[in-house]
Image (tube, rainbow, N blue to C red; front, side, top):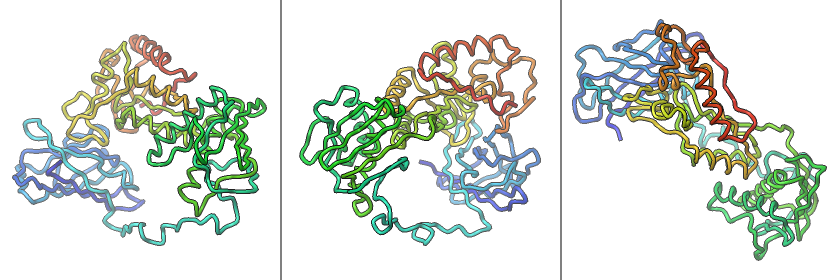
Length: 456
């Protein structure tokens, strides 16, 4: 909870960077004095920036510290308003505004500040909810086409009859262990994503359920499958485990759609579906450095990828804003580099306020996530971002820094100064060899991504 509120608006057009308007509201019931306002924002004050009714004390990448005019006293229930011009770029979206803020008191203590939405002052913003901009639900039964709920749309569909969905699907008695394991893992996936739904799969027969027969077909690609439907059974043709998982996910889509929206979708009763991915690498990137996520949140993200048949998680584990992976050779990386805040060696940045933001993934958590992902056809590619984007590394291990390098001698596009590994420092190679050796042991994927971008 907080007793202070920061409201921020913007005026301008595409021909200028515009002006940001700030109002700090004191709702604490007490007079506020001897303070600075710290805030993080993608809309940074540039080298030619100016403040009205305020002074820019410092700017560290996205973290700005602003002082009110000397001897300012902000009474209870009053507000201090100021503006800044000379932004580095035009604000175009709500996320270009202030993402977090806090007060820094004269004794060094901090107080949290809540932040209002970032909206333009010179145009009308109307909500879409309830307006004609929100389309009506599409009724598939009123249009020509197949009433199937499945994503992505399969390569070839030849369904001649539909029916109400079975209560669930179960493996035929002769099903082998690998196919049963695939069904168990897809069942667990569905139950994690939709815990309130009736289970789509069971390893045991149940009233109203329909059996699945698994038939190996080495002519199909690894992730391809063919589904053959009849009123009394479904046959899954696949080359192996990955094809079986994709087939079962598609069956889960169709079963859930027919249950949840029977006015739109039906379940196949006769015919065939053949599908295989167009691209072997279907990836999605997740940055856990700039914002901290828990192991369970990453696990849920993996589940969402699997349910949509994406198969590579590009896991961005390190950046200027934090190091998020346990490395036994260098405990400082997580002891220092995984902590960010006003009282930490790593300064607060986007999304971080008065409280310390901290977190990293242990070796045990990584092992659990790698196993969880493999069960549902998702590989994890780790990224250790070098040689730029290494502020967290250099603050954690100062021996990596070049002692002859002048402060602020170069800057990244994000505004971080002196944030790159130096190839002329011998310790750089010992550091990288040890880090990548541990990363390679944690992740079975054949590639490690090394970033390589935006070196100042």
